[in-house]
Amino acid sequence: MEDAPLTRESLNGQAYARLCRDLKAGRFAPGEKLKLRDLAAEMGISPTPVREALARLISEQALEQVGHHSVRVPVMDEERFAEVRELRLVLEGRAAAGAAAHATPAEVKRLEALHEEMAAQREAADAAAELLAAERFHREVYALARMPVLQRMVEGLWLQCGPLMRALQTHALAQPRKQHPHHQVLRGLRKSDGELARKGVEEEIERTTAPLLAYLRER
Image (cartoon, rainbow, N blue to C red):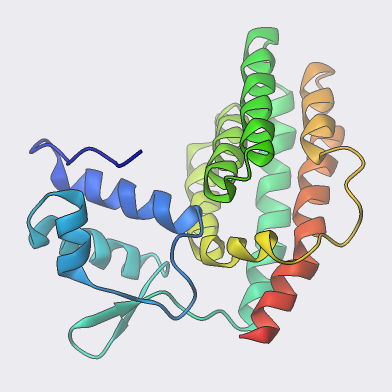
């Protein structure tokens, strides 16, 4: 289903949100150049708000300027990947632990539904939709920690990792998947066990490390 054209209201913010979504869904490959006019035409708006959204993403290190007129997705090297991975382990683990202190039964039920949505997208072999569903699950978990600064930092790291996530479509996970780590996160939230929730998040990040590194090395 195609996206509807953007409205006049807050075009800059909507263009930014659309590009963030596409980055996190792995739509753009590392090294890919983004064409301003093509993006504007796709969104149904003028180039100006798209240009400003691109500039914002450059300032957040999710994109990079090449020359005076080109913007591309950065090609992450192994050193930068290791730094981003370490930060994700620390920050996302902390957010999950914080969420366990506040999650209500109704909120856990909502997260269970989000996980089931992700599983359905996997069964449908819709990799982009699966990535976005997983991102929504984690975003809502971390929001429960009530630490908005921490959550913004995490989302900035996701933007940098998004273009690598297409590797999960072609490279096997480091270990066979017996049970998705989300189940451990959910158990931690139900029991108000911050350490259990933290370990679930850390396991998910760890299990994706090998395929992402393999993808990086191939490129």
